[in-house]
Image (cartoon, rainbow, N blue to C red; front, top):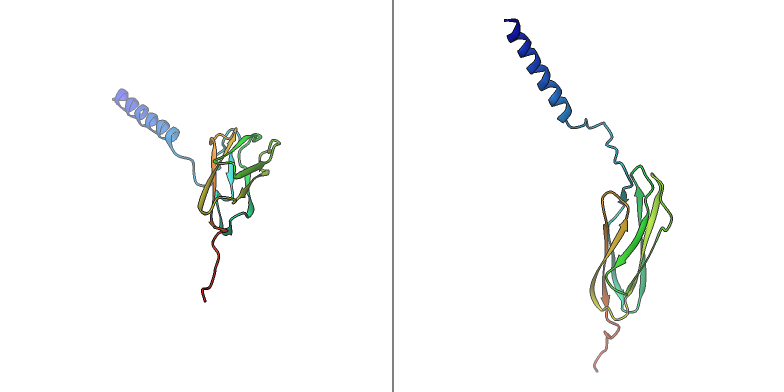
Length: 146
């Protein structure tokens, strides 16, 4: 009888320990990511309608929400009409940085959707940003026939 009770106690204790190790963290517990994490305030921007030949720019801001310095090694764009600039120094945990995209609409009449790829040491991998704009042709002129 003692052996059966001891066996039952050991099994219930073993199940309790196994369940405690696989339980998810409570909602109020903070999950710490080991390494840098890039977190943008926005991933997409709309310039609206602009005229062909206009040069516009937008700055995307980010925060390093990780626990190690974040370093952006490259910012890639999809065409030569977009010129990027970015924070070139390491961004400490809790600090912010920027990615600026300048778009030259010369020869780009119509709807434009451009993608910017941010290459960094973030544990989440490369980040994608984008912007859209509708470029009205400079050849579109209003004329009245009399």
